[in-house]
Image 1 (tube, helix red, strand yellow):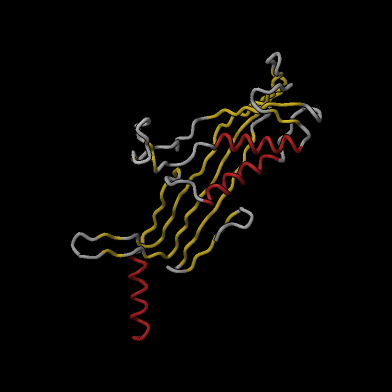
Image 2 (cartoon, helix red, strand yellow):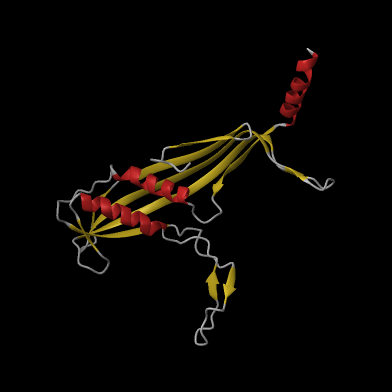
Length: 225
């Protein structure tokens, strides 16, 4: 009994110190990782099988896309004049946040789907029989975290800090898109058809168990480990 007493007390002490906490879902604050890019593309891909326009094969269409400007537009955190010529003395921004190409990416993926259906895609400025207007209501990633254990502690009294003691930790990321499509006659501007909105999601969760053991759960094909 005495031999079992000390390990049991140690376990009880760890459980007593352990705290459970969960951070609210929030947007990623870093430039897009490969996982985020895969999540976004997978979310769009899941909507394409349902996308169908009432047009005959060979119809010419020009795609337009509209939506909210991404709040992760390029933001200069510092400037570098070493690359500027005397004729162009304006500061050159470096260390940008992330490229604002989200809406263009959605447009190009939808263009590929419409081309598979036999439609002919025209570039902006070229003659087309129809205008396809894609309205993106939301497109982005969110992340959240749940922890059962002791978070890292920075001591003001001791000259060292305690690392995170993880009994169970879940780090989750989810991508989401919602959009609708309006079809117009290019010559008259008359609305020909309007679709209901399409919705797609994808997730990637990273788990840590008992300090060292980790595994991934995701609906991505061949998710990064």
